[in-house]
Structure formats: C-alpha cells, structure tokens
Picture (spheres, rainbow, N blue to C red):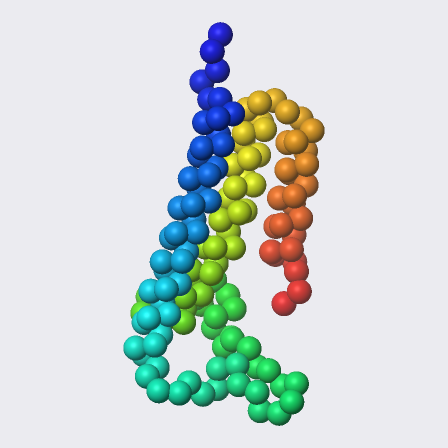
Length: 132
C-alpha cells in the first residue's frame, strides 16, 4: 500500500513554509520601516536614546505586546508594522516545529514526537512565562 504523504513531500512543505515565512516577514518589516521613515522625517528622538552612560530605554511600551501592536497596525503605525514583521519572523521556525510534530505523528515515530513535544513545551513556556 502506497503512503499518501511521503517524507519528501513533508520536506518540500517545510522548506516552502520557511521560505514563505521569511519572505513575508521581511516584506512586512521593510514596508513598516518605509512607513516609519515617512512618518518620522528628520531625527528621531526618545526612541532608544541614551541619556547617560548605561541608560538605554529600548522600544516604547506599545511595541512589547501583540494586542497593542495589532491595534497600532490598524492606525497605520510604521513601527508597529515593522514589529509585526519581526513577530512573524520569530514564529516561522515555531510553525516548522509544529509541522514537524504532525509529520512525526503521521510516521508513528514516538521518540521524535516526544522530543518535538518537549521542544514545543519549552518554547511556549518561555513565550508565556519568560522574563518580562
């Protein structure tokens, strides 16, 4: 009996997933950067500025949560659009791990299924309970 999905098919889909994820995230980030430059013509002040040695403020608070980023995208905020592109770039390999999990389940490979579940648990634990 012939398998419906072969390992080669899975490898092709994972490769396309990674390529599309990177292309989409880079396109969104580039678009957000261009929008940001048009919105902030001239020198940008107060964004990651160093007031004294060792005092780096980092990104504004609204760029640190997915909900606030999405609401600012609706307002066409260039920095939020670029940040969303970075989020997509971060989640692209996570999607690859999820897809690999389904691949290992289809292959009935218990060892790699267990390892992949552990990796996903670590990723999600750090995502939800990591340092803030």
